[in-house]
Image (tube, one colour):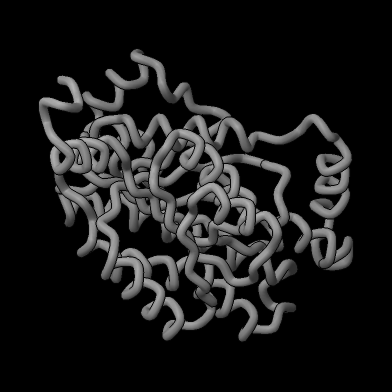
Length: 284
C-alpha cells in the first residue's frame, strides 16, 4: 500500500494504528524512565504520571512524552489523573511501576500507620488505577490490551524486615490471576525483576543495620558492584509480554532472572498448563 492510495485521512488513520499508546504510572521511577525511553524511541505514544518533576522528565517531554502530575498517596489525585488520561487517550499498555520498601524493620517494631501507607502505595492505589483506567483500554490492538505490574520477593520464603512490601506484592500476584479470570479481553501480567540497582534500595540503606539486619550489608555490596543492573532486561521482558498472546502470559508471574521467558519450549508448557507461574499451595 502506498500513501497516495489511502489519501491524507487514510494516512492519518494508518499511522495512528501503527503506533501504540503506553501509559506508565510513576514514569519518574527508574523502571518507568527506562521503559518510556525505549517506547518513545520506537515511535509510540507515551503517557506518564509523576510526583516530582525533574530534568529527566524534561528530557522525556522533549521526546514527546505526555505527563500528568499525580501523588499516588492521594486517592483524589489518582482519580483526577485517571480522568484526564481516560478522557483523551485509549491505551494499549498500562504499566504500573511505583514501589517502596518502607517501612523497613520487624513488623511489631514499625509504626503501623507507615506500614498501612506502604500497603496503600504498593497495592491498593495500584488497584484503584486499574479500576479507573480499564474502561479506556483499546480492545482492537494485536493480542488485546495488557496491564503490567512488578512483583517482589516472598512467594517462596519469608523476606524479613519488608512485610508491607512483601504482602502487597503477593496480593498483586493473586490480583493478576483474578483480573485475568474476570476480564478476558485484557491481558494481565506481573514480572518479578529480581535485584535491580534502582532508587528503591535507598530505603534499606536509610534503615541501617539496626532495622534492615543482614540486608543492609547485602544491599551495600550489590550497590557497589557497578556492573549489576538489569534495567535493559526489564525492558526486554516487558516488550516480550506485550508481544505475547494471552494464553502464554496473562494471569502469570514471571521471574526475570530464573524463568526462560521468550523461549518456544516455555511457551508450549505455559499453553498446556494453566497453573504454571501462579500462586499455588505446595506440598500440603
